[in-house]
Amino acid sequence: MVFVRHRTQKQSMPIPASKDSRDFILGRIRKALPQSAPLPEVINSPDWQTFPDPWARFAEVLGSVGGQVVRCSSLDQANQHLESMPLWSTAQVRYSAVDGLGDTSAATAAAVHPHELENVDFAVLRGHLAVAENGAVWVTDDTLVHRVLYFIPQHMALVVPADCIVHNMHQAYSRIPVGSHRFAGFISGPSKTADIEQSLVIGAHGARSLTVYLVDGLPDLLAQTP
Image 1 (cartoon, one colour):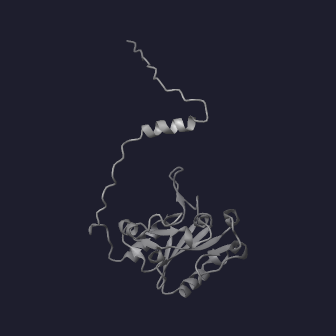
Image 2: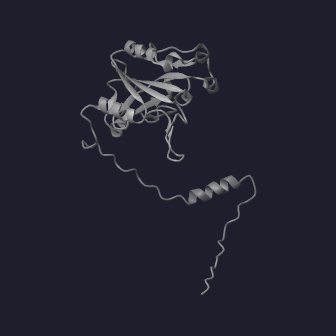
Image 3: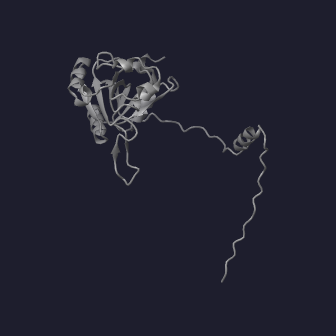
């Protein structure tokens, strides 16, 4: 028995070879877009996941993805811990966006272009809030010289007010002023990937280590956002 496949030629509309071809293509795409639908209502339910000790849960989850948490009563205590870290003390190029915690190398302090930050060994940056369920920290670009510092340093520390911790992402998003920053996002642990042969690699696309300082008494910067 012989099977014969018959192909049918699809009729396609020719694209005009002119400067208007871009508008022609985009116009065809817009006509084929599916009908929009309203976003589902987010229910502020008391049944969202919560934890008896959100600070302990945050430390547990962050530790499981390669980071560490240090709870401090003041910036002075956090600074003492930072100065005791070999990764900080041996770093030749440093950057700190938190007054009273670490210092900034002269070359880094004078940087105005992101490419001038490519050699940063250790960066101390500000975080706004911590999420217990996934060990994530919300960061924005208005607290530092350039957003590349979230990705380019070899090692990184995030400083978060100890009382700015929420149980879950639903609570986190209820506190985030959407549209108030040019860049923002969640960071959980150091950079990691396991795409190749299921082998986990730390620091493939960003920082090789992450320390989160939960510091008592720090101002809540999100509360100051208009």
